[in-house]
Image (cartoon, rainbow, N blue to C red; front, top):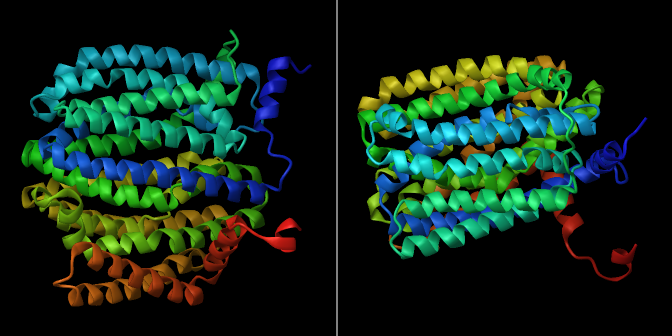
Length: 504
């Protein structure tokens, strides 16, 4: 018998009406818009804050957010991801996930406050204790919003997610800039996180229309724990690696060096998220819907992979080529040590463009264990690379990341080919084609940069960007024709149409 609560959940999570492909494309479009609003606004905020705050301030928050990311994982325990890919999401299942997540979030926030002095000793950076304690409320907000957000994602309601995420990001950015101008220092960054997470959780509850019951079933908990423990282990490994890296850098090179690394990482990550991060959350849901059909799964992965390279690669190529002009222009001369790091990290990002997509593939296919094994090996190798190269500076560490990224890409070729029951070359050929395209566009952009030696930075960067984009799209038309066609198709579908054709 179906209860009213079950009916509400079914109404929210059904993937019906429009074809799955159309809803997926719409989801990508809306999340891309959200990413542009949130990340572009966030990047402008970082540019402003980088001129008002010091590298040490960014280093303190980088250390604190390392700890917070660990706590986020434990609070959710991967239950949100389980709800997204589950064959059926009942009211009891969702309520069980909610009660665990919310209660654990509160408990972990208390633990953060008490453990903050020990965290400061671990990282060897003075002033971390109050920053960690100040971020504790964010853990509670994230845990309270985990299930409503999962309901929205399962129902492919990415328009609602896009609006609420963009609104939350803008609210946090406005508050942060105001506090920084007022002399709040590192607390501008702390309050930005708190405000953003608060707005997200409020919006998720309002838009999801989901409410928990008093139900809590241990059988459902055990079921979700079996899947979620693998998911959280994957993310935990990545967070542990990042935390250990930050600890090594802060202890060996100091908080200022960690701040320089953080700014370079923010530049590259923002570029990736603005151009392609919408593919990963949508692909997880879509892959879960078609995982029983091997042919559809292969086609879907191939199209998503091609589109990712066509969309994301140009911006990363610009960073590789123009970092010597771009970094000081955006952040100021005090961030000069981040120039080489940004270029190297952008090269590494080129080889990991599809890592998030591959992650979504394994989760959507219900194979988190295989991805966990991969993540443990690659993250351990990355950490060892950081430890070995730390004494040589942050640029050496970033170059080590490039080598690890290339190796990791080759390993993923093997793993994905086995999952899709396809040849290794059929998976690798898209990456090879993309590298050729990016090499050609990088060479053209570098040539323009040499000619633009005396030009104003804005003019030089614009010229490099236009040339890189033009060459990249031209080459992709031949080496990645499927991704180019999909991009053109989506752009045309969203351009305003007039006349009789538009009415039809």
